Length: 590
Image (cartoon, rainbow, N blue to C red):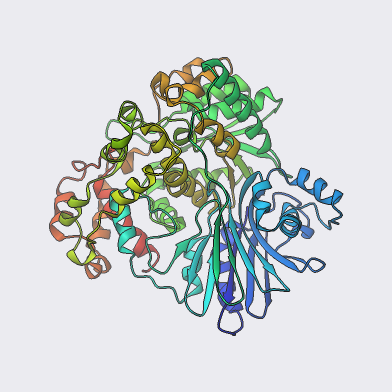
């Protein structure tokens, strides 16, 4: 829930409250239910509120605890806040609200920065210590909630979105050339702390940053999943353990003072969530599916499967069919809501779906993350028999969009870097201990990096653009730890996600479990033609694009001459990838 921002000065000046207010204006869609600003000399905090827990004004933010000398802004949800509150009460703390934000404050006072190890949830926060001037920034283990930072010699600013930092002003908006390399090579994923802009960084997941009054900063990483294999369990044992973990994760994410729905795509992941909620006794559960018109011989919806699940479990189902006439205008809104350029064509689907769903509920559960955590993608099986010492290069062969050498034929020479930044990043990650097999190393990288800066970011940006909170039970950190310790053979079975299929059998309809894996289909973007082709052609030929000179003219001409003929390793459109970056830069006037 919510959007947060703030400024910390290091030069003796007062925090720019007007700049914080501008950032808050950009964050309004994330928190349409209320707002607040707090300042005390060199520090200012801003907050936009989406009311999910403690709907009263006592839960408003920035939240000041004068007795403890702490002020906080918070985005997300601590699913175990009630249990923590009781524990803190036993330790002598008094509460003035029923908000999880107040639990955060008391927990920090009681346990310091290690309080995050006790949290079950998704979160980004800032806490200011009145007596020391220390500011603490924190982010959840899987990076479900974002936190962007812009820092110079005089001050540090932070916000829930990159566009909010831009609204604050005085940001270095030159392109980060290493990030550009990642964008074009590492499947459009820019690993933290970098972003596509040189002047903006993001706090990595599972990190608490402590910033003292003189500007010194200490970053503490508090969680890393271990992918070493647990022994002594057979296939049945693993399926039962996963089922128990998912039951717990789904139940945790029903904590709210407002109704909670489900985004039901018709795939196994979201269908399993619905099945478990029905098993737990949920009645009249609101479920939502979206579909588009067919294009290029590809269907644009999976209503057959989502309808089947809705009927089986008696949900209050909403089928949202989007006409192409609505899709094209929505692209601009989706691109504007992106904190960073995101190539996945289903971004606009999530954006439109979130717009409709927000009319009915404020919170939904989503199946995001299951493919990365439980080995559902088709680039994992080819790694099953790869020797560990060849794992990194084998992964790059199946996942990277293109090799480093290919960029010399794509980018203007001034935008090239000498080093293979993406390849070096992957090889360094694979070289770390704790992942005995090639598939383990790939799943570790995808779970802790790719997942965070592609699917998770996509869902947060698109849902929060409409004041809708998405909760992801497959990213419950205890479930992730369990899945990480499972031997890959169980996860890769049955064409991928075999362990999840075993756990779902008897609860989810067999037709859904045994179906061919689907995606969030948006055919009009996968098969660029007509007005969509006009959109990308105009973006790549716009005066701003010509002045920026990112790409070599011959490369752009080649893509436009054959819009569907140029694909990355994983089959994505090279034209859409090139154009999306330009569209994003132009949308944000960069």
